[in-house]
Amino acid sequence: MNAKLDTTVTTRPVTRQTFDEVLVPTYAPAAMVPVRAAGLDLWDQTGKHYLDFTSGIAVASLGHCHPVLVEALTRQANTLWHLGNGYTNEPVLRLALALTEATFADRAFFCNSGAEANEAAFKLARKYAHTKFGAHKSRIISCFNSFHGRTLFTVSVGGQAKYTEGFEPLPQAIDHIAFNDIEAARAAIGDDVCAVVVEPVQGEGGVMPADVEYLKELRALCDKTGALLIFDEVQCGMGRTGDLFAYMGYGVTPDVLTSAKALGNGYPIGAMLTTETLAAALGVGTHGTTYGGNPMATTVALNVLETINQPAFLARVKEAGAKLRATLEKLAADYPQFLSTVRGSGLLLGVVLADAFKGRSKDIQKAAEAQGLMMLIAGTDVVRFAPALIVTDAQIAEADRLLRVALDSLAAA
Image 1 (cartoon, one colour):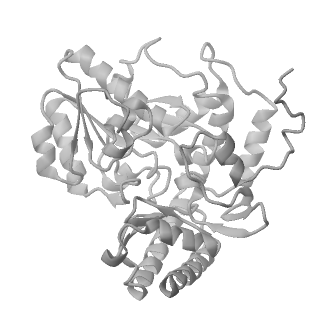
Image 2 (cartoon, rainbow, N blue to C red; image 1 turned 180 degrees about the vertical axis):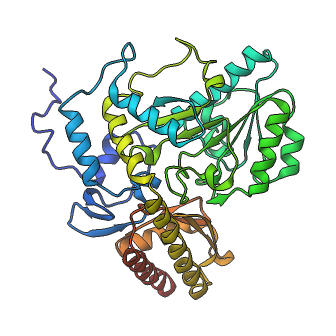
């Protein structure tokens, strides 16, 4: 018997210090430990209440413990959990039908995360180009400040060198260009490019929306060179911008789209969506995943999709996004020593810090948390807001009140 085994492990007390003792130190989480939540309300171990304007980094878009999802997951948990990819299941078939009917896609591949969805997309692009054009057509073009995941392949495609340092040698034939720079795109996208990947709204890179002209030019360049246009909508998709997927609002259709985060509202799932022709490049045995498309995850995701993909729901997201943007713009005007411009789309918004406060986004986040408001950062110079899509006007007003108290505390420090 293992001497370290404690039979009371499921009930023994744990604290934030336990993280430092037993977890690999890849994160630096907040001092408080959340224990329960409902909607946008969350409570920590001490019973302190927080208003959550992070939704788990744009994940819990229907809020915590949404009753429809709890019921669906409970029902499926008592029905069928896992089979393995030698079999299919009814929930994954229903979800694939729903996603293909709702989008440009004909085919779906399911996995467990955004990184895995992007990994599948990049592998598809390489495989398709290799089969149709030959091995020379293998280069992938991405944007600086992009984020596409943490596997070695996806982090190399991502345009932030800080995430690849120390992991060399990196996968080859990957180049980066400036985001929203049409001339840079024209110079980079040649006949040896198999894929161009872009976030319609850069999330981790500072909440930067793409210009519609830029995305249209990427589409034209891909059509000209035979490259695949991949939209990474892991953060900005699933209703976040007020459209089911951001590409719909831009009027630019990709060849491949990746989704995750809000697709499962916290239950791990990712999806790669593409066309019939392209999907054929990934034949039996060319790619796979143990848990991808399992009945639990796909049941939750189908209920998420059916809830979000309603005209009234998406119209309210746009309305709430406009309300939050106006609130943040007024906040920035009232606190020019801390905040400047507001940017983003729908309910994915960022506020750029004033020059005098550059590099201190974490200070604002910590001050807000002390007042009971959970919010995000996007680098050191942008504070980010991604509340659940069900956020009310009253909750937006309360977030504004709490943030004003937080900024007042920083001003007094």
